[in-house]
Length: 114
Image 1 (cartoon, rainbow, N blue to C red):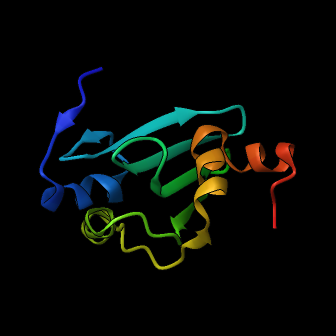
Image 2 (image 1 turned 45 degrees about the horizontal axis):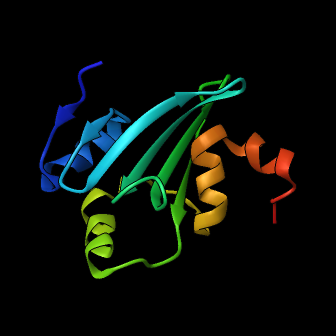
């Protein structure tokens, strides 16, 4: 698959539409799981997911936002790529990495829910 290269200042629309892209030290990818489709937006690698959207079998999408800080540049990325959706569930980095890999069921299976 050919992933579109975009500037970070133009990437928000890709995030809002949940389209994969490659930005300047940012990227987004989509993964199909058994129970859902997961779209994750990262800064500087998969160790720091900034935002994750999970769409279930009923076509309902839930957004999760990383509540932790990493660096000044990553904070800038979070501002540039924020999807500006009405509701986002706050999540720490560790839990958000699991959701980015396998959806909310990944957390449940590992016993990492709140």
